[in-house]
Image 1 (tube, one colour):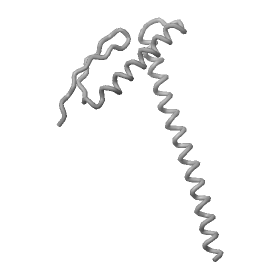
Image 2 (tube, rainbow, N blue to C red):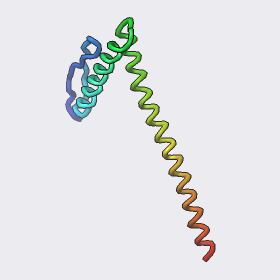
Image 3 (cartoon, rainbow, N blue to C red):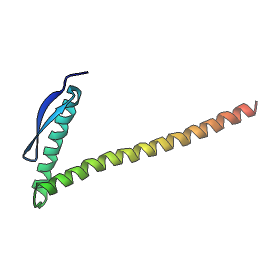
Image 4 (tube, rainbow, N blue to C red):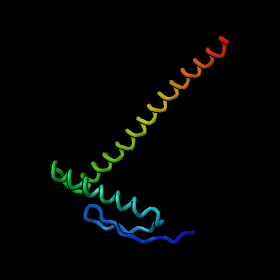
Length: 98
């Protein structure tokens, strides 16, 4: 079992101590940095009442990106399946005509 790593991440002027697997550190630090950058952007461009509003908008932004990628992957998979079916039909027609 690998050793756990204790880190502290700062998000929206709060420090969050975490105990993680070392393999998670880079991803978590990047995520915290992205949240901070997006929060600053929202604070500069929109009238926000408090940090909770900013964090809610950050969560919505990141969650919508994940959902959109899932939708795009599903569409891509469906298109690939349709093409494979069409190709299989062509192959079957060629085999049947011989």
